[in-house]
Length: 484
Image (cartoon, rainbow, N blue to C red; front, side, top):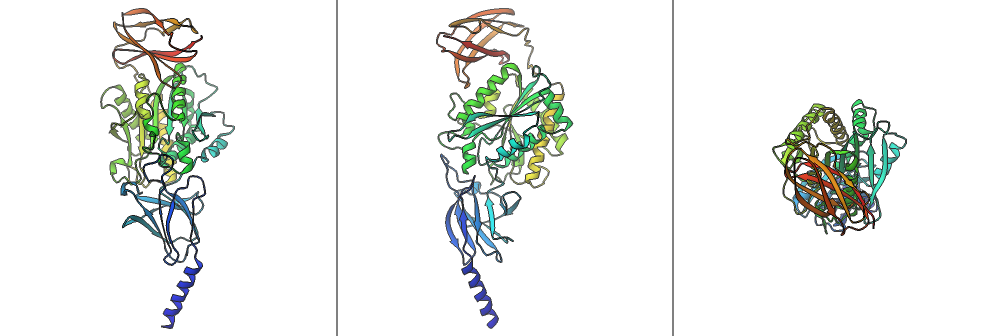
């Protein structure tokens, strides 16, 4: 009896000594404290809706002052089980992270674990904070193959960074364009490690990276929704519009507007060849086919074939399979769909969905494997570009580049172009945000054609145009200036 009393007194003393504190005062954090139970060494929290969030997915907080001689029970209240992670993550220093599974009990998922320190960081997955981009920029400082600029400024005043990778000693003329975006949905933090791994590869001395830099200009926007990434938001289906449903014109978010404009501008001088948007499915995804796959817009045709060629290149470099799924209907245009419709000569446009738990070969995803996964994508891009890939879907041949003249002009201009056969031609003009301002369809004959256009409704500024035939094949695109 004396021993039992001693043990009870020890436990009571330990519980009285333990004063658990939950902290959400750091970058990317998210949690609302619902209960702290020092006696039972447990806490209960829930995810907070940030800005225009409608889903409670992201949680990231620090727990300190608990009794490290006993198991700590962290309870996360859920709105829907689908939003809770199959595996959460914890760290003692926000650098090295470990995975942990939990059990649904009542309205919460409980994560019970012994910790060897009295302070632990706990999150829905591996966090990737906005300020990490500054660290990357510093890492690449002095690298001749990397240029970093701010492509946009967010609604809360944060810089949206654009990383450019190419070999400046090789003339840009003749290089193809590759565009990569990430974190259109802020909750998808694991996808950022994939993008970082790709960036590290592109900046490296690897022979395949060197080849890619000599043949392509690769633009990467690692985090599109920088504000939600910084404040710990979920972002998926947020109000007033999901970042990855905002690619129709006119777009709402500044980052989307400015990245669209930059894509159009860069495509004037170099052919847009590949677009990839990096994503994760929901962290509670239990479908094993969601471990790793690409979305496609069609099951047939040139772009479908090209996507499969790229998937084979990825398998050859990584040794694990990249699946494929048809894109599902969305209320607004996604980035990959907008690119697919806007740049009709592109080889393929896709989003890569990298899962939260296991790779297709069964390996559990870790930060290291996500980074290596990005390297695999980089090597696959290099191998894909090193081969000869057809870019014409039918017998249409571009006989010569179109030309607008005069340029600049005030109200009207003419354009010369040639086609290999008679067809209906559509001429469209866009402002720098990608918004269509002018469209006219007319019939062309085989050979040389000259048409006049009246642009009286356009104000002074820079505009972009494209010409497509009735098969949807891009004949040419370019830039013109209106001066009034």
